[in-house]
View 1 (cartoon, rainbow, N blue to C red):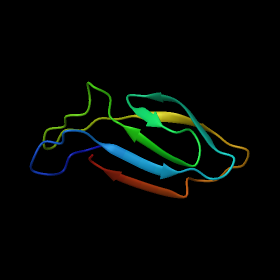
View 2: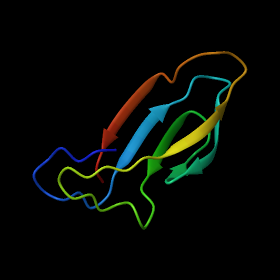
View 3: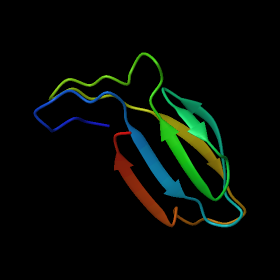
View 4: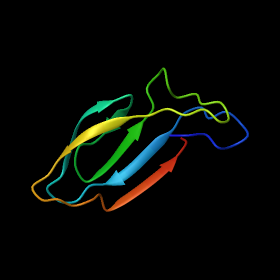
Length: 78
């Protein structure tokens, strides 16, 4: 996540819809809500405030029964 704006971000979210048969696990540098279907990753307590030009990274593992990309991906701030 990168803040390209002119003001500080007080938190961030990334939403995605996983394909059928996909499951999210083992997030790092973020917290997730849900593990299948519509999933949202959010900042942790220590990486939520991003000054203009600042960035942070996060990740997770996805297991799947087939090789497919998530259906949708959205980024924003709460």
